[in-house]
Image 1: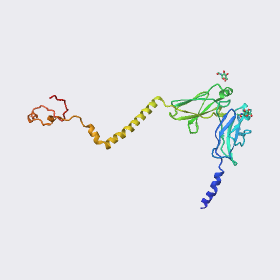
Image 2: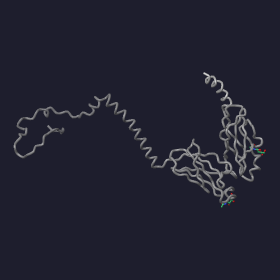
Image 3: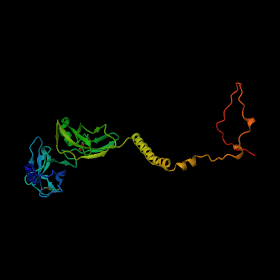
Image 4: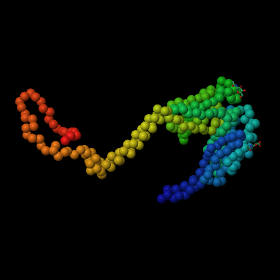
Length: 285
Ligand SMILES: *[C@@H]1O[C@H](CO)[C@@H](O)[C@H](O)[C@H]1NC(C)=O
Ligand SMILES: *[C@@H]1O[C@H](CO)[C@@H](O)[C@H](O)[C@H]1NC(C)=O
């Protein structure tokens, strides 16, 4: 009883003070940061923060604090990013309750964000990356790319590093896979990652043929089986009539053969074939 009363009192309290949903789809394009607002709730404000090269400290982006809009011009940090790459993140807030921060991605390549083209072939995905970018030239041998990948809808947990284009093998055909790329400096990721791109892994020709043939077979079976079952169950008499031979015996053939024509069993070694069936042959009168 007491527990019930407590629940009734406490649950709505907790519910009304729940932090807002984190912002979604945070993208930067030419120093303009955008995100999708929470469609179900008003009274939510957003704060953008940046973290400079080599520092783990997050600082509020000037003019992008507690804004109720769903975009912010972050060009004021452009000067700060000239000496290194910056990271950006956005946090939602309502009545003092803060959502987790979500990192932004970049829709276009930039000094600190790679540019890539994705191509898919049966069983693999290739991320085409240039060896000749400002970031790689400046950091020489210490910089490379990190390509994150995973099935669409799942976290991109797998990754592969490389100085240029990267191919990911042994992927399931017919599945959609997504990738995101970020620069790597020594062992740290640097700058904004690219926004996620996805591609469908096509099926190889032989596999496609097998799939089509099995689909056709299943289709034919599904179509033919009910027809056969219908005739066996409900139209048996019709089947019998169709299966009857069309030939009708002529009258004189039905008359029993005269006695002397019948072979008389004897004790000789000769063998006789026993007539078990007769095939109709056209007889000319
Ligand atoms: C962002 O602000 C800068 C300087 O205030 C301005 O030059 C630039 O055009 C703005 N960008 C956008 C997309 O509004
Ligand atoms: C690398 O890119 C720069 C500028 O984009 C260009 O001037 C240079 O010729 C390129 N180098 C090679 C080896 O392609």
